[in-house]
Image (cartoon, rainbow, N blue to C red):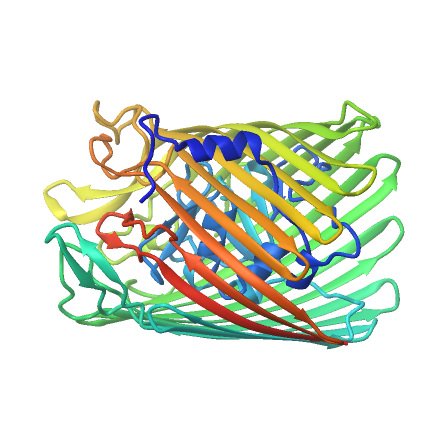
Length: 640
């Protein structure tokens, strides 16, 4: 078991952060080991208009093809994932905020439930997406309001050079876990079809150490299975007209295991079904372009224990974006959004609806060859009421001509509406809740460098942020009835921190190597307000670590490769007075792989060992996590 030094961070972390910057980038597993050209696409865009944006490397997606989104982000991004256990609910935390302040999108359409205001990342399989974009802080206003922390956008894209590509993968893992994925892409330069299917099942019955009884026990009532199917159709009609149709159906079932200190009486279980569809049209001209996007979402959840609760919601999302570059050095991007949500829940007295109409505008001005300015303005009308005016202003400065380095800064004002659960939950909802308010300031810099021989690529970023949230919604017991909880606008939260990332990849002849490191320092504290007592004032919010770090080492020779991943999470407080906490932990994971390259076929075998040192740990109190576990993936890819 790895141990933490008295200063809270292991020496390994400090060594990797400052001495080992980088990770190997490539587009396919085979390309990771045998590159004809050096891939120089970076994780951190230098031309960012003053706002931080990050891309998850495509090689990471391929190696984690059978993982869920929560597992991927916890290992390879600066986002903290709050998970209730293997296969259970998992939600993201950006920059000291809650899951409600993170927007998860699919091709620009929000997947957040209007009931809960969040998305469960554990039921989103990585195999369903071609790319993952992470948008931080004020940059989220480009898409919508309310994302104080940021946006995770899951992208499906067309490869117009593709003719036929069939990709089949089968995984066998510990705890009777089996996962299958099938991706079929075919088409021409004018039409592309992308079909993706996934299936997974697991008993999830791992052994754990019960800290209450000091006995080794086996987790019960924890099985889960999932299947999904998506179809994306892309049409290119000449050089100016593009049309895409996207459909995604998913079905998820899971049992809910008891925590360590209690037993399930009724063996609760949950079933989630979702059908999502998007139609998008783009028209491209020399000086302007138009994008029209419409989406429908039909979501169903059935929770069963002693009684059955059914929750259904329907969402219609419509967006128009216009991009005009008719004036030199000036880009103008106005837009209109309209969203309609309808919720039919057993926990509401009747059907509830919400309409949101938004007017959006972005202006980007190249003041000089070194300076770029951007301004985002948004005004929303929710159920006929004007919302607070929101904006984000950014500046990008590139001081050197021969070195790809940019400095950036931005300031933003944002708001978030209460969820429908906050307002209408039976006997507990509060329809008089106000909007949460947020002001954020951010500054950072990004650089990348490629040697003349194209053997070495290096990039890095350092960002600092300062955020102030007021009218934060908290659920608390009502006066005179400690069993009845209601939401109220009480809390004020002050969040500030530093994010650092550095990447290096090196290739020469048949060898390739790299390492990527991400470090986050986050202080998110309760400030003096009606909701705080003296022992809570200035204390860290529960379940938000002050320090988090991950690092991935990648090495390859010919058709062999090995990847080592390390994750550190510092202590998370479980009491608002910071007197109780969950200890920090170090996790190690490792992959070994071999590719066999035939004429039009690539066969690969990958062995995965998670929690390499068999660490006994918990992410949430009394919710055990699995010890050392194994997985084998067989993958075949045919490309013509």
